[in-house]
Image (cartoon, rainbow, N blue to C red; front, side, top):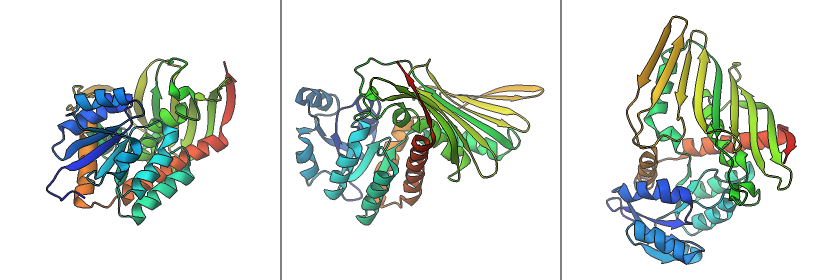
Length: 330
């Protein structure tokens, strides 16, 4: 394994779009990380990735995991392939940064996190948005009474329809909209409302010919009665937002989940006789999370808090699946 003063040598297991557009550019810019190898079932694609990110070695999946000079693995494979390859990487002694969701169900998520803990390895689910400073600012404003006592939380992540061939429409590969988009508002609710959040009810729209969840709505609640209305899907206009309604005001954050590094987020605050917009600093959430991952590995940081959130998120997703009314759509 790399010494603390050396960069973390990362192998990339899969050449997904999110890796190309966001995570690998962030890794390439991070002085604590060296992209050391790339693996893909499509060798031409792997070589294209390698050429764009410093010409690391191009290896097969198993060869990459067996490489003794690879310290950690980034896994941007489709959701339903995560459990198998994350387990293989951990058993090979590699730290793992895995795209969200960590797995498709709570049981396998528990097993992977327990495996990582038993071997002293970092396993981090790549949920990026909590690492943007806009959310730290919003949480502090809520604690300072910006809207009074919080009553209701609303979060939305929806995108327009994709091509029929997109892997998100394959429940056995991409897992559908609940796992792909629903993770965001669920994680946001946990971030702002805490781990005691419980799912009360849900509606899932399911494509009849494939069985894929294409959208849904979740009603959840804290023990103190703060409600969470969580909307997700891939048959809508593009929306990524969080809103907080309190006893004395409303706070709204647009581009809650996908702000590019060049964007200055804007908070909207409304009270009875007051309207205000607060422009926040730009921030690079992907850069932040890859630095966080590298630091956790290189310093041996305790990951129990992050693991607990991933476990709770996975259980809430299981609860949605269990409680939801399913409506078939064309």
